[in-house]
Length: 363
Image (cartoon, rainbow, N blue to C red; front, side, top):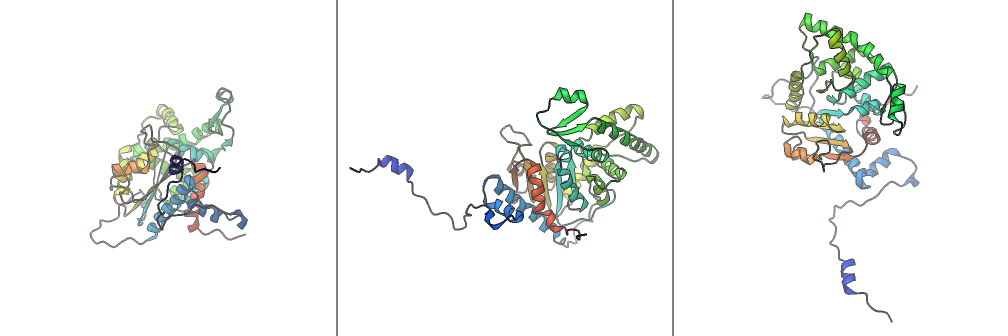
């Protein structure tokens, strides 16, 4: 004989729902029955949920930056003359885009994506770690190779091979880097002594971009397009090793970090609007955020990193923490994508910056 289930169970399981709001978005993905269309596939990320949705929101946020950048500057007779943001000058636009990344991304194939942005003059200010500077130049001198994460450190050390995750860099690459950079450092010392040149990390990167004279280099294009590159911890890497050795061979070179902090902060202060795209955490993330504090926050922000906030680190902090400091405006719609930037950033560029560049004609 049939009997009713316990009301306690039905009351718990069959709770009545309220109506969803009329503007609620329905979850959906890509139907491969329609063929392979990568743009259409990436568009469905917005409604796929989880980090795919964060990716879709990041695409929207970057496109908002680019749309604002394309708008004409407002006319304001009270506005001061545009600040000379770089020793060679850089035109002001309606949105200054700051790009930050850690050294591992230059070591990886993402370097080619970063070079695309610099070559096409799509960002206005770059902040990188020391490794993010030197590895670009070293790759112009000798290649980096794919390896495995599990390779034994002591065996690699005996062979003179350095491991960056699953990438391998022969130590000879750094010897070639020393041979290349030492004469440049000599010339910098000479210009400091004879011409009164005040060197800063950004001026040094600019000079190295000129000297490398190689279109494979990110910083060659930064030099060509007058994109300032800031690296306040420039000594924290192979460049620091070279500066250390050089200080014995030809002492006297001075790098002024105070002039650089004034320059990057003034870039933010004198910008009409600002957008931040930050790949990874640590120094590059905070340096860009703190510059934007000087203008009470950026209007647009996208973070891509795998950091978590439970330990209180700035690297793992969500954008809302930066809002509390005045580094991102309260009216902004910032996005954090929890992902490895090597997976995500080329796809972000494909859906944003790359759409504004005409493909070269077919040969």
